[in-house]
Image 1 (tube, one colour):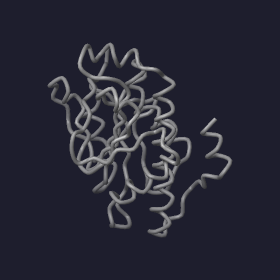
Image 2 (cartoon, one colour):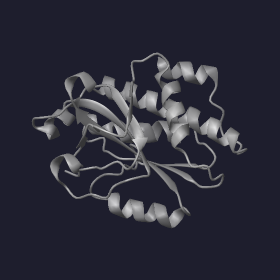
Image 3 (cartoon, one colour):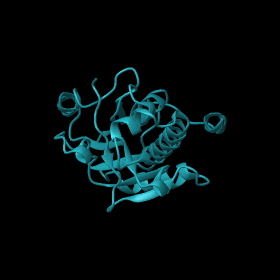
Length: 210
C-alpha cells in the first residue's frame, strides 16, 4: 500500500484551535493571515498530504478537494482525493511545484496523532510539516508554515489507528480548515489588491456547516 506514516502532535511553535470552537474557521483565518508573506506577488502554495486509502490520513486530500472547488487568485492547491500527495510521490511533487512556481510560500497540511484530549485540535504555525517523523521514516519536510489536524490517539499501532479513525471527525475538521484557508485567502488578496476568482457567499458558508 502507498501509505504515508503520520507524524505526531506538535509540542512547540504552533497555535491550537479546536474545530468545535464557535467560529473556529475565523480564528484559523487570522492565524493563517499572520503567517503569509508580505510580498504581494509571491505565490501561495497549499500542499495537502495524505491518502484516501486510510480514513484518518484523508484529512489532507479532503481539504485539497474542498479548496480546489473554490479557487483563489495567487493560491495554488496540490493534493486532492483525485490526485493525492503521499509517501511515494512526495519528493517528485515538491520538485515539480518548485519548477512551476517562482519562490512559492508553501503551507504544508497533514493529519497527525496526539493525546486523547487533543483529538480534534488544529495546529498552525511557522515551520514545515514533517511527514513520517513519528515512525522515523525519512521524507522531505514540507512548507514554511504548517497546518495539522489531530485526528486520533497516538501510542499504539498508529497505522491501524489511522485506518479506523471516524470519517465524520475528519470531514468536519477538513471543512473547518478549508473554510479558514479560504477566508484568509480572500482577506489576503484584498489587502494585496488581488481580485479573487470566486466569492464565498453567506449561503456557501452555511451549506458547509450542514
